Every structure is written in structure tokens, then in C-alpha cells.
Length: 291
Ligand SMILES: [Zn+2]
Image (cartoon, rainbow, N blue to C red; front, side):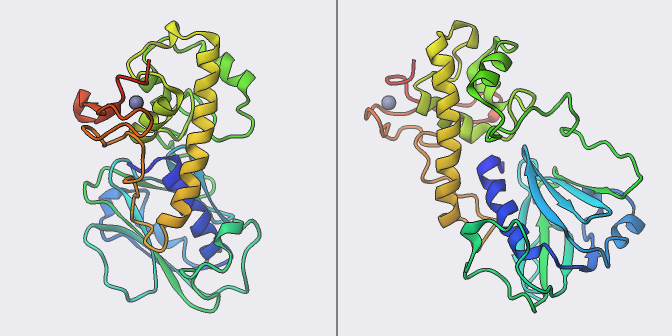
């Protein structure tokens, strides 16, 4: 599942590559993935893309007038490509863009001079594909009220890397959640953007066990969890900037410390990493150096 670091890379890259371009065609080969009407999709043609942002585990395309919100769920992936490149299987939505005058405002510094960046005078396509068809593309025309599940104020808290999420705010927010730490980190109403993989990484970095209850944490452990969250996510973004482009569909996870590494030695203490699968989702941790 794409999490905050994965989608931060896609949002930065796609904003740098696409903002300032106008939509020349909008198609939905798998219309069941789309929440909205064919007319609303067609109405995107001619609109200029203002920005692409990430919020939690969702991607927001802002066209100035209309918006498009994508929730890739477990298996949704994005492709940035020249028009005419072979269409991958299970492509749900295609947005084609024309040329633009130049690099947009707000383009992330790390994308400058990137080899994968399409030329400003070239056409380019974004394709969203989803093998399990669980993800959704929400069309949000101006003036139409359409609820995006997961994006309401009750459902989504501050992004895990939001600068306004200070240690003080963290200490306050975490009091409302007495339960298991892994569930806490994955709870989007506590902090947004962390899922199954990075929750394991954060807990390993903090030296805390995933099934430990928050109510048992000492104050310094609450603070350690905050520090580990920020450090783990910012390091992941650094690594993925090198590892993900030009194939934005890729989800580079092999470099992680514990998640999905069951049976391998813990990089911190050498103990074999434990792995359990409650509900079918892998949880990996070290019994020796996480407490
Ligand atoms: Zn260990």
C-alpha cells in the first residue's frame, strides 16, 4: 500500500512535471474505479493543472476550478509516461496533458534537472492503474458536494510530517488513544499517512513493540515515538527520491530495517526478526531490542 513517503515522491514529481499543463484528454478504461459521471471527467479537458499534493494516503489534483482526489488503497499505482507508450493492464484512468510554458512554481528542489522530467514542450500522460480495483478516483467538480471517504475532518488528522504537529501537539493527541501502538500509528485520525509498513519501521526505530499499549508508555517513550516518526519518514523520503523515479509505480521497500524482513537479522542487534500476520497483514519486529 502506498504510504506517506511513497506518495510524497509521486506528489512532488508529478507537480514538477505536470503543473501548468492543460488536460487534452481524460479517459476511464475502468469506469468502476471512478466516482463521478463521464461528463464530469470530460469537463476536465481544457482545465489547467494548478497543483498536485498529498494528504494522508491520498493524492489531490487541483485544476483551479475542479479537483480530482485519488485514494490508491492497497494496489493503486501511478505512471508518468509519454503518450503512446504501451498501456499497462488494469489501467483505470488516463489524463493526457499538453505542453506548458515552463517549470511551475512550488516545484520541489530535488526534481530539478531530473532525467525523467518530460520536456515542457512535450505532451505527457498520467495513468492510474489498480490490479485489485479497490482504489477510487473521485471527481470533484466545482459546486458538487461529493464526500471522499477518509478525507473528512473526523477521519483524517494532521499529516505525520506536518510541521504543525509539534511534540506538544503529539503529547496531547496521543492521550486519546490508549490502544496498541501499531494500530495507533495506522489510525489516520491520529496522524495521517502511516500504514502497515512504515508503522513497523517507526516502532523499530523507537525501540517499542507493535502490540504494546500506549497506556503503558512512560512520558519519554511517548516522546521517543514522536522523534522516531519524524526521523523514519524523512529518511524514507530521502531514500525514495533516489530509488523510485523514473518508474513511479515502484514501491521500493527492500531497504527497510524490519518490515517484511522476518527471519533475517535485526540491523540493530542481530536477533532474528519476528513476523506475525494478524488479519493477513504482516507485522515485523525485533523481540530483543523492541520493548
Ligand atoms: Zn533488534
